[in-house]
Image 1 (cartoon, rainbow, N blue to C red):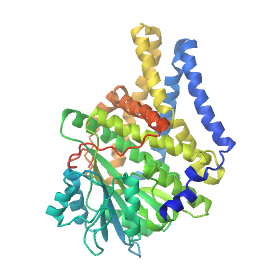
Image 2 (image 1 turned 90 degrees about the vertical axis):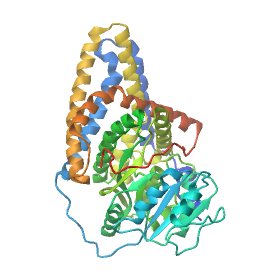
Image 3 (image 1 turned 90 degrees about the horizontal axis):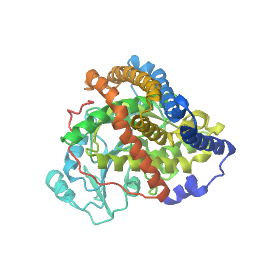
Image 4 (image 1 turned 180 degrees about the vertical axis):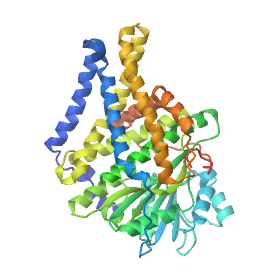
Length: 474
């Protein structure tokens, strides 16, 4: 049933014609990139570094946009008291997650407003998952492809290994609740997270999907501590950015590691797409598209009071694999939904958000190319060019530094005063990130082009550490 609905609705199958506006936007982005590469070898002076100038200008535009749109966070939101309490289920997606599974389930059971249903969507785990579930939750494994009986506190769905999206789809028909929340097995919800999800959906009947706020947690190794430090400030900026886009009714990025959905809406559009590298991101495109096409006021948001800690890559290879998959899935989704780019019928989503995402397809290439040009200038002794370029970079670092401090202040007002992000460490991060972590992100995204072009799809299995409430962000 879900598969038939997906094939009827998804542009991956229906293949609508690509309008001229989309061709022009994507074509202009590609031609600009080629022109800037050529300019690096033909122009003189600062113009030879045009790729870097455009990269800095674009990143500054996004930063200023986020700054302006997040100004309302200076004032605490007015609490809402919904008249109707919707029922809520949680689906835990798991594949060989035995080390963290017990902590994630316990965090759900100890919520002040626990879920009405919990389904463990086990994607064919071969590790100690069965032993953990038996010892700590008295769960006996059902036959492969089956689910434990209704009425149990936790229901265990054992599916053949087919990927996260396929396993989530198997769980959806077993839900009875109005809402469902997807939680990765390596994600631990903080107190009040489900209450915040339930209240926001109850207060807004047109809300079809919402993301909670995530803080990263890595293994306690040298590389893990460094990557957690950088990712902490990256996550802070990213979630503020999501708030900014939600304020424009254009939020597309809902983190499947902790996301809430209105069950009927997801069933209406055919569930998750098993062939997408980033099934959560693609689903939001489909929900928003369907809402516009059928004159429904469906929208999405980010909920500051719904907080969780999630395991993040603790080594450079693992980080690159994650970002390669994320960016490959982003390109995949942008390609499938290319007819929405520049389309007036989708309002700000089509006229603002998706054209910006078209630019984002080339952003990591701009960043890496600009950096390698700097190395060339340095090793070839082109000091006269390095001076103005260095001045631009320092000005951008100063701007980033100011925004780092401002973003932490806003983040504390938004997500709670217990946020542990440090002002002093944010200062250091603003100076180090452009020449280290940012290059890693761009490299991972560039590798994502390989995933996209080769249609490679995997649900990476990495070493997990139990998320701690002493994470540097919460």
